[in-house]
Image (cartoon, rainbow, N blue to C red):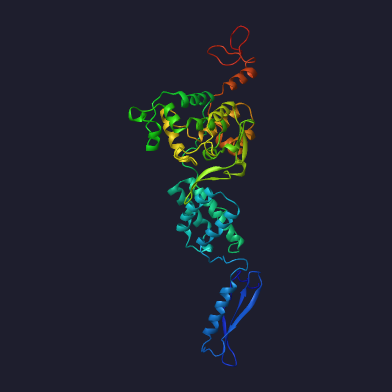
Length: 430
């Protein structure tokens, strides 16, 4: 049985041989990255003292270190894991990933570098990576852990491409399941949504005071005498029309606040979703000319009540919903905070801005339109995302009883206190 081959990039035992002129030669066999085993040697340079051959061996080891670097990059199995992140980030930028995505990835990647950065790539085994991902879930939550696994998968995919690894160790890493039962999608029914749209314009229910001085000034002194009503608060903060457009489109909050007047065609009764408002560290609020996914770039029909609302609004700036403090983009966090006050006053604490998306999807489903229509309306790349996460569940469907009655009611008759069909005399059948 033959001797097993050396591992790729490894070398055999180094031998020292003294030459006739007194210098030394150090040699060994090395298996290169093309799989071929070759003999490599280095000799003591002329004029340099070398009594035992140690100098020749040092030159040989330096040559072997240079030889072990793959020809297509500087990343090897001995490279630190922290080197992978900036290289992978360059790929993300080249691929045109959204700035908001990069900001989120930077935040999670900082934790990856802190936890794994000093490991060599060959030391990042699947068990070690899985332990790290599960620790991320315990400390920061399951969604963050899933994002960390996604980033690690891309980083080590790059390591495989550079030849530092032959198999991506993250491929078999699992993330822990969410704690507790998965919450089912909850959506407003048509009656609740219609009442909400009336309340934001007409409700006299007291609304908690606005927390910021700027919003207090917009109330024109009302807050100094009494708590404003929901209608007054919505009028002062310009949130009523925002709620109307949420209900009319089911847009994400960043998409809705990023709608420009040039994206609206009131004659055709459509709005083009072409970007979103995001906050980027060092840049502030900006409008990105992209959506969460390519499927988010879409044209949505506008119901008549939304067209009427837009026709009433004054076109002050390029955006439909400008900031009340000097114009410019309106901050999604500010709108969410204002909506929090409104929903609390109306007893709708469970209704977030994202609930409008689930409500629109559920109403589309209840009206008999396909799941693909709902996915196109919401801008989902996968129809399964719409059906699994956005359709409201757990409702009582009276139509089911009507269907069963129509199918089975004529064939089954019941006698009080008995179960089963009866005979013509009203007695249970034998």
